[in-house]
Image 1 (cartoon, helix red, strand yellow):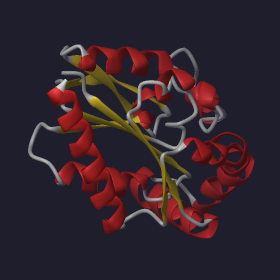
Image 2: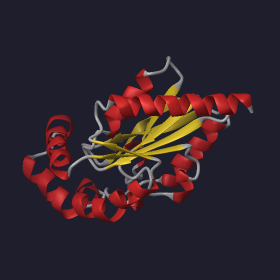
Image 3: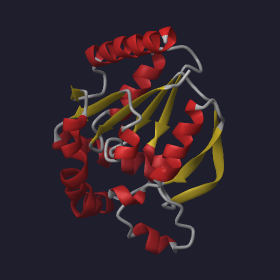
Length: 209
């Protein structure tokens, strides 16, 4: 049976990951797989660390979308795939990969999840988490300092140089492609209940076929 593909997009710090994790918790072990777009930043081993730090990671070209599409196709065909592991401290992929088995439901989550027609064409459900920019910036600032060892100045500089303009150009316009726009994100139980109902309906439809 072909997997159900769900795309969850939205600005940095909007609450996409929380929504995705809440959906995963609604189902049993091995039923729902979350694929993080961040895992698919391109391999930049040929560049120095200083050169990698200057890359615009908020532009759609920074992701190896071809590999993600290949992995999604493989999973839908019942194949096991090796997902890249990305290291934010070095701005590069780790040498190791993560083995992933096929699942009934695949969630593709990331700020640019709805940017690529070749990917959105495979999605059964498209979601956009819409959260005010000030809240998103505060969440990103705290995350990058605590989880990624960044300085306050570096987070602010990156936000002004690439995150904010790329959001306006490539991320926010895609909310009009979404089937459902989720306000605030995070612990939106109504949204999770609606998504679960939709997943169950699609699962039943595909099972009956």
